[in-house]
Length: 165
Image (cartoon, rainbow, N blue to C red; front, side):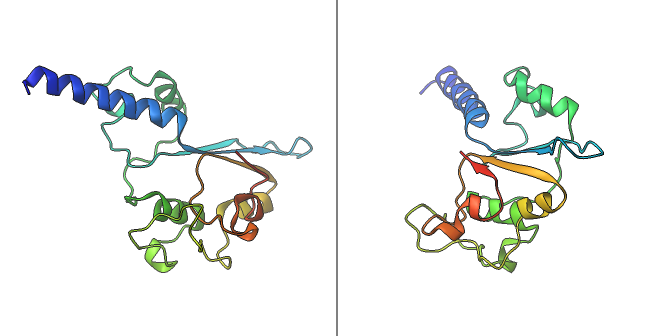
């Protein structure tokens, strides 16, 4: 395989990855209730699996402009760029939702919780949407869940999200 073919395949891979980021993140969108006396800030949290520093436009020299919408959001918001993350979706989501390291909540294993898995994030763990709801936010999740599916108490709407799609 010649170098130009390899370069083209790498550019295609990186572009596809950036496009997948736009369509497959877990996007949490929170808005304040219309009757609140003080306006709360809107919170939109995007979680993308296996995303490296150089994989989207604003963090890359060779992909500059490849993700204009994400670049625009990043320029207007807070970018969390120097934090430890997990390499699989289940431990990453469990950490985000609980604020705890996976080893402290039993999610450190090399396994993704699929819809067929007969287990999930422990129901005794209080997760992010319940804290936000306590402070007057409505909560919505879009994307994959991977924290338990096999019975209703493990589903996102039973764990504090008003809607899930």
